[in-house]
Image (cartoon, rainbow, N blue to C red):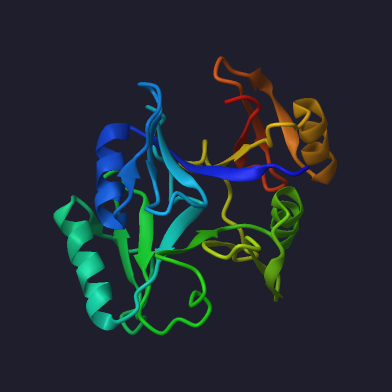
Length: 240
């Protein structure tokens, strides 16, 4: 049995502040949990949560992953941008062209995200978080498709994308050139095992697909840190 996507995690210098920002932008509510588990949940309690974990590691370069937020109308795009700016976000320049219809912002911790213009057909069947857009190779797209059991919904010119059979947010990889990795990723995926799964068997399966186990092993909360084929960190919750 495959793991499921449990959370998209942010390594944050101020986890509580960042959780408040994203809760306000997305309209998601805080999740119940232990004191060190700062998370927000979507309104329908489906799909993944966002978790905000403390980290004092300095930011180096642009993130390898960012959110693409969708808009049904130009007015909705303007409202999302205005709300993000009111909550502490800011405009940022990542080389976008003036004629492009998406707006690039950064959250209060400097994590880039895009507010996509209305009429984007690729994200039409997703949700408010249309995509987690990642730098990455075709190989890593294939890895995550097999790891999560999500089918490929795009595979062209070394660009790949996957989506849950239930729909919702897509995860995309832009293909080469992939920028060199500098330091620990600020955003990463966290998987959870089915209740009746054998943790070691599932970890072995992920390794057989191309993951690498790290020397860190399992921490006190039952999280095991691995690397995907592009060297991106991800964690597996072996118990909850």
